[in-house]
Image 1 (spheres, helix red, strand yellow):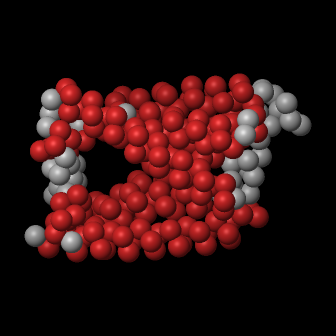
Image 2 (cartoon, helix red, strand yellow; image 1 turned 90 degrees about the horizontal axis):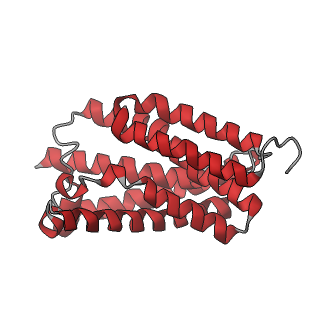
Image 3 (cartoon, helix red, strand yellow; image 1 turned 135 degrees about the horizontal axis):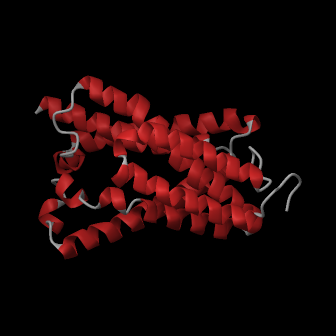
Length: 238
């Protein structure tokens, strides 16, 4: 154990997973309306687990020394995503990918709340601290970077199983391909786990190369929030 550690790093990894599992159930099934409360609280608990295992702010990518570099990375990544969404939104072939029945009819105020509050303080805060901060940091302390990246990415992929159960119905672009059959749902689930798992690998690598959690957090926010904005704008123009 490191100095000041009360539990081992491997125990910290186990406890982190045991905290994330009920948080996933709470946010997606038991009390989804309390998302903005449970997400920050869970993130705080996970940071406490890291500290109990002898981890530091640097292990979570949250030390001040990396803030400036991480912010620069985040700014560039947000710009890249914005440019990509702009091009995709202008092309008829890809415009339909932004349509989502879960957000149809949402007004500008609702979209602003999602973009400025719910996504950054709920989704990004919890998932970045949980997977690229605490879990990745603890795994990297106990094993090498490959194990840390693979473990974090795999669990990040599985984290998205519950949120994507009705994705083929919510995304009209996917409905003709997968429909609502059991096989279709299974294929969407497998695709979601694979896609988000690969995204988790990218996020971990950004965390490693930038030395800051701000880099993956910026890309994560841009992917979710700017996609929502693009869908809203395209819907308003129809």
